View (cartoon, rainbow, N blue to C red):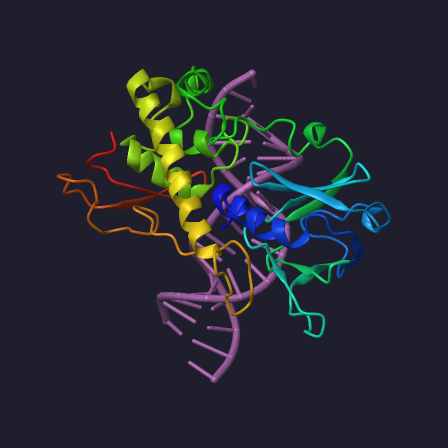
Length: 273
DNA sequence: ACCACTACCTGAAGGC
DNA sequence: TGCCTTCAGGTAGTGG
């Protein structure tokens, strides 16, 4: 499931292969993903030189010299990989991008929760305009988080998943961060004290940094069977560890699973209060 | 404004 | 073996 660290890892993997190259051909093998592709996508991007790949939250921003930016979201099953010219497409290979340096980039997405759009003003685009702070950025600190949680009666699990408060966390890293910070997922936002908020800020950053480091490591000589970029095995502490012993020293609790907002929550009822 | 809930989509996994 | 149900998840929309 691509959350911030996975998307950032994809960005780092793609960048050296295609930045500076010109997009020769864009092939759309269906009319839509989650939403229809924009009408003039081909005309806007073909012939344009890619000058940078940026990331905001879980969105990739392919910035071209002609002022157009391709926004891409991987949803939950989207992935990019490079394919040799003679290789044939597989099922769910929906988008194909040929660059003038020989790179043939494929977007693959079985569940099609992903999305793409083209814009000239990414920061004002409806997908990005209302996003909260980047958790690894300078604006995310205890003061910021305290202001976001003030007066909120919603539970912490749901609040951390809300991209308007913090941009880039998904179900896995929310579970992990709350466990590290010893905060119960059912706690209402407004009940957190300053010390807990400060712990949570550190936990969120550490969890993301650790995942990023693990992704970067794996990427160094990344050649999986399918060549997919950006996915890596990362050892989680609570996510999908229902019934196992809590890994906090001296805790002795067992990890439980519950459902909040229709999503699995994993937590330790002993040390997360 | 705030908050809870659901549709979208496919493949994997489990039950019988 | 095979059919059926359930689950996974980010986002956007609905309705209270």
